[in-house]
Length: 433
Image 1 (cartoon, one colour):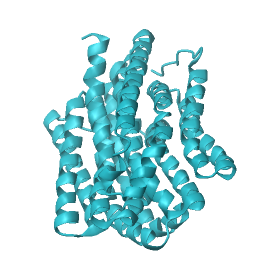
Image 2 (cartoon, helix red, strand yellow):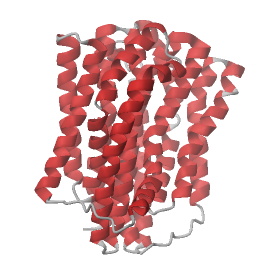
Image 3 (spheres, helix red, strand yellow):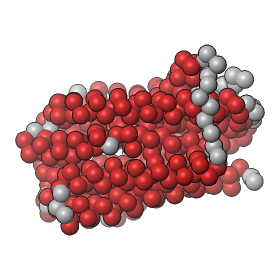
């Protein structure tokens, strides 16, 4: 199979899987916004970073194990790969328990820190109570998907995500609209949807007879360190849009009040899907990048990376054009009022301007962590929210709410320029065999 066919075999299912994971939040916003109004829409937006943190933890751990599993396949050490599989499962279960306790105890205080207050805080707290109780299924579902993708199950990973997505949509309709369970109904639908993704992944592992190795020959700490070291990059890549969400929500609340937060909600939902489509391109190319890197074939590794650049830019342009044409109807989908819908139509083009630059930085980051160049991946991932924070300290005070909105594409431009700088004259990483 040539490189282009291999690329699309992995990337297209990955794009669909990531897009569906983003539609989880949009589905909740759609059903809750139409059922309960603007405050509920803002509450989902405030609570979503906490949900996303749980899912990003699963993705980071799963991808950390999956990268090492693929590299071990490439350099012909499958026994070592099975040990990475086993340690990944242990870490997923451990973090599930930890985050359940932390969010049950601390989510109300965190929501207040994010800027939630009054009815918005009460609704968001109700949502998070159910989400925290279901953290196990969310972490296991998101954590197993990258593993089975790197085991050659890219279509199975996509099918698992589709199963969870369909379950979530059906149950949102039943729990929120028919049974009128409100915010709790939306959260329960999300948790059950992730549980179905988890079960679908288990079925794949059982059918394929993929067995983890749970004996680490005295090197337990090494496996943990290696998984978490790589996993910090995909964790950050998955969660960084939510750092943006937290910072922009806080700034919008301070500069423009509750109306500005509500206005940003549909924009953040739309942007999350585009970002996840682009992450689908970058993470979908990761198995090929890691496998060819493990084989020592740097020419193929770079060819896959360059193909990912071109396809990500194409996806970005297509999304920009479609969303610009539909900008006048974007917020109405979520039950927003006429005033909010009109305001969103006016400011959405500001956010669209950053999509091209996201395509560059996302692919570059995936290339770095897929080939073990973790420091450069960290710089890119965590440099973007740092740039956003610095911009938010200046622009909103200088030009008001428009300055808050402009900080997002400017931080994305900064990350893209940094990624090009780090890629220039980048030496081939050395393979640990």
